[in-house]
Image (tube, rainbow, N blue to C red; front, side):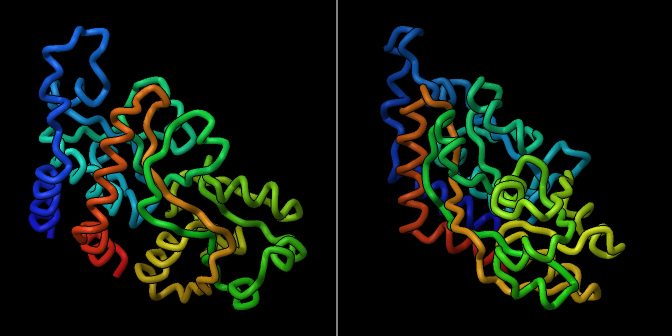
Length: 265
């Protein structure tokens, strides 16, 4: 499957083209764009949280990651003709990391919120998602936002996520319990420490599929609309333009569908 993905990515490179980058050596150093610098050094540095399966999951003690977002990043790097270096960072540190230049891009199931967009640029969305619940309580699985708020249950959310913000603002009577990983949330549901875990559609679907014995339930009604995009620093408009063009062509040549078939089924 990965060979097919890389094959498509290399085909994308021929379509997208990086002729502007190849002329970087002729430009003064202070005029070299971030994209040209990436191509010149042969490395694209990705920031990702590694805690949102199937989008991004850290492996090898945080030294590597797998998932839809990781394969997308590998394809983007392959289209540039460079290697991908992965940095696992807390979700709430990713925007600052790309803004400061610690990483070149962020691909991490990152919702394109207005607040984040005031700090960074976004290419996309490459996928749209929405909030949903994982629970063992049937009434909660079918509840709307007002009913959930009225029930006043404890609810696990990923620390620094839009789910955490959604509970605090949209459901003030619900106690949000911030966790670092999905595994923590699953354990808390099993132990009845929380009533549910609020996350995004692909994450909820993966939890239910990967834990059949727990009899988790959820109705995927999508409580919100979450456009998911790739973040770059505000000054890196050349890199943004390339990334945007990559996503357009990735959609049209079927790469996004290949990744969805691999990770969402």
